[in-house]
Length: 429
Image (cartoon, rainbow, N blue to C red; front, top):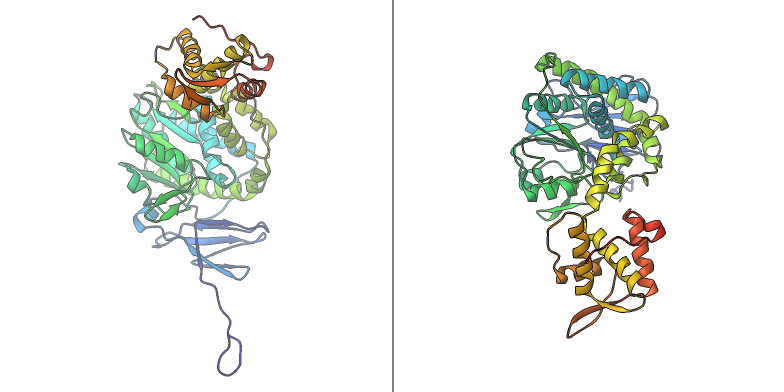
């Protein structure tokens, strides 16, 4: 573009709104809170120094803070500075001790909660954000844990009376830590929260796609009811205790938040690249826990020993996950196919016959639910088994060697006991 006098005009690109950026050269932009300011500011770290300003320029591109609504911004926990955090081990132990002291949690629960805090700082590097579910009769300690986590987690915001519509009204891509305290979570909201805990799922809302990915803390009296949360969530049951808790008033919360957020920013800056490179082998965990295990391991990306502790921390959850899979219909379907392949290799069997085998397996494991043959046929199709055209007695599946091989592979993928040796489950018809 040229002016009439022949001189070239410089076109300055419009500022990009951001809640944080990580550049290929290692530079970073972070949202920064400023006392008595109506808007957040940005901090640019260029590898040698910090620059704090209402707007930042990097590599010829201008950036300004994301348009976070004022009432949300007032509640949003942001650092105002950066200070050294020590080693990852020291920082994790400090976080554990702080949570245990202020909330009275046992060592395991405090360690899990502390790893969730650190994961909130490197949330950009994980594919599935952890969900911390808090419930139990001791509501005072449950509320205290939420208050502590609000001070500790990155971009934490406390919410209540959340609906799907109100959740979708929050700022896009802010990488919040959502602290939701309410007595009931509807099925629709729970599904939305599950989608928001996965980095690759964008949520359509009013003609645009929302990125609401972030760590979630869910606290309420009935959130454990009927076990509505996925096994990959961390559940902390608040049971009454006679342990006296230290005071934690508004002034104490401000002091803890100011000191800890400054250290958390330092931790994020130091460990983000290592977390991006982390290759943690979660194959020893049951299928439903692998994402959670990877995310918790990423919280300590430069310490292999701390990553190994995740196996012990999730041991009970892993056992529960494996037990739940014992009656999972996909597992039952694969086992029924392996039984049929052993008894009638190469022959064609009706889907109704396979559903009868599956029903016997399910009943033998203490479940009294009924398997519908039609729904069972659809399940087989979803697992990759193609039936032959229907005849007068229904649909058939030929038990070819390809079908058997696929069933064996699924058995290994689903961690079905005995799948390595293709053992036949015991069935009593």
